[in-house]
Each structure stands twice: as structure tokens, then as C-alpha cells.
Image 1 (cartoon, rainbow, N blue to C red):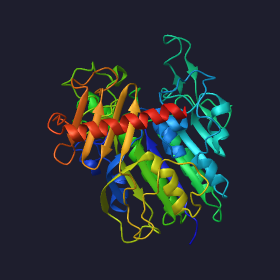
Image 2: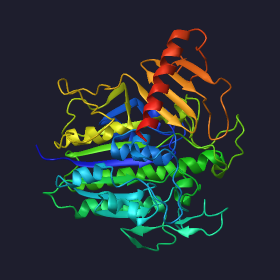
Image 3: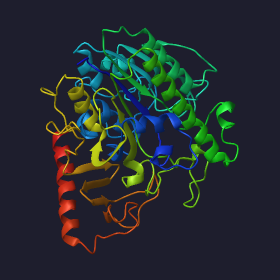
Image 4: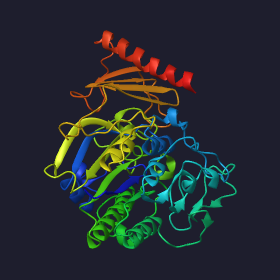
Length: 434
């Protein structure tokens, strides 16, 4: 079989309820909806972190964030250190087996060239190294000493480029389609398309805003930003088909964490207001270990390799760290010799997507969480960056209460104590390895 191309689409702050195929009644995402119909749509896919840098570290290394050495949001100031070169990325692994590799969009795993994409196995890079930029000027305004001294942050490999006025989502799509058009027929490639949408600042061209005339301003700008991403996915899929590569290309689409309640998303952060993005039925947002902060939309398409499974909906439990081993398995490279926490999502005997995890664990800024089957325990939980959950120990039955509204910790003390012991032991093992 021909070695497949691999494309990872990774959005920024996209919520579980922000796509049509995940139940949104406002967002129009026909291209992603079509991709879901032609592939597998996952309902229990998790980020390994409720914020961006650690999530991306897990995606690219196949490890829990702490094992990859990235547990918090990395700064965007030039020279900021990032993901250590001692960790093998998916790009490095595939490059060593003959793949051409490219990243278009957001990096956020080190703002210096020393820790940049080219140092981590990407042959080509076009995008930015910080956590966010202005969509038109490509300037990073935040975290620069109280907001002063903003820096321009757009690069082609290690050369700074200036494209003031180009909408970033469209520029990323432009670079990705050009890469596909230029790719040799006899060489497979891995392309990481990391859209910064719908992360703040809330920018979108008028043509996209005009598609949603009846939405209120906060939802309208969010819908427009997501529509631009959806169009980008559609253009990239079209380029694959025009080049005869669609059937032999693995496509994975997801996002780094749940929707943000940060003030730069326009609103004042009160409980009853809509925040622009939607976590669907789930509780919590970005920075929270409740479902809204970590459960993500996820779609996998591979026409030549998933014959007969198109249109499936998988309720199995997976995480971003599973992408590394899954892509190595599907590409025929194999995982031998790699130190991974993730596992391939496909059962070797049946070929079906089956969860390899009895338990999944999370830690972020004093919060701990574990999921085992239908049970989910959150310790010291927060609802976003600042709002704290009333109960320090919160046990949920996700089959009966997926929104984690009912605390069952007092009703099931043995389960609560066991899961708390397990997650604390896991966290202790991270401290011992550090």
C-alpha cells in the first residue's frame, strides 16, 4: 500500500459545540461536516491539557504534558524557551522515515528559533511562534512587560516576513494548498495546519461576517472566524482531490482546548453570558479540567485505510497523545523505540477504533482529574482561569450527567477515594520523574 500523507488540523480555543456536526445551530461548517460523514467522528476525544502549549506538546510528542516538560502556557517574548530538543516530535519521527514535513500556523512551543519548528523536524514553517497574534498585522501584543513593547511574529522558517493586511487564517490556507500542489507524487508528507482561530483577537473579514446577519455580535464574530477555518479545510481537501492525493491522505481535525472566557473575547465573564465559543452541553471552559475545558471535537478521515467505516461515530475514550502512535502505525513506521504515553487508537486484530486507556489523567495549575469508564473525578476544579468550583472533590457519572452538574462524591465514597488515590499517585510519579 502507498504510504499515506498525513494532515493534522489543529484549531485554537474551539469548543465541543462549535461545529455543525457536533450540534451547533449557529455555526455553519459544511466542509468539516462532510469530512465527518466521510470519516469517523469522536465524541469522547480529550485534550491532554485545558490550555494551548501543553496540549500541543502532547499532540506532537505522544506524552503527557509533564513528561514532555510543558505544563503551562509558554510566553511569546522573543527568546522564550520551549519544548526541549530531547523529545522526538511526530515531525522528526516521520522525517526520519522519508516524509516531507511542514507546519503552517501556530507553534507556541518556544518563541526562539532554537526551540522553533525547524529545530523539531519541520522542513518548512510559515507562521508564528507565540500564542496568538493580530490576524492582520501579525503582531503579538500580550505578555510583553505589561502590554508594552509588542513584537511582530510572522516567519518563513527562521526568516521574518512582513505581510501586513493578510488575514492569518487565509494565509495559512494559502501556504498549505501551495505545499500540496508542489509536493512530489512519490514522496509522502506530513503537514500540521495549526489555525489560530477562533482564539482572540476577534477578527474576521466582512465577507464572513455577512454570512451571519442574524446572530448577536459575539456569536457573529465567532461564527465568521470558524467559517473561515471551515472554508480553509475545504480548500485543502479540494487541493488534495485535484492532485489525486485525497484517498491516500490521513486527515485529523481537532482543537487544543475548550472555548475561552478571557476578556479579550469581548465579554465581562459573568456566569450567564455567552462567551462567543461554545462547550456544548459541557461545564467549564479553557483552563478547566471539567469536560468543557478538555473534551474536543475530533474527526479522522482516511478513505483508503478506513474503508467501510465512513460515517462512524465512536464513543471510545481517546486523547491527543494517541495521535503520535496512531499516525506512526497507519503510516507503517511503527512505534518501537519511542517512549510514549499514548497508544494507537486502532485495535491490531479488529481494525476498529478502541480505547487503549483504562484511565486518563490531567493536571493543571493545582487541579487534578481522572476519568475511568463512566466515572470522572475533579479535584480543586475551576470553571475557567479564575472561577473556582464550590466543591474541592467532584465525582461525576458521565453516562448519566455528562455536564458534571451533580456531585456524587458523598454517594460513592469508595469510588471517590480510589480515584483520588490513583490520580494523586499518578501526579506524584510525575514529580519524581521531573
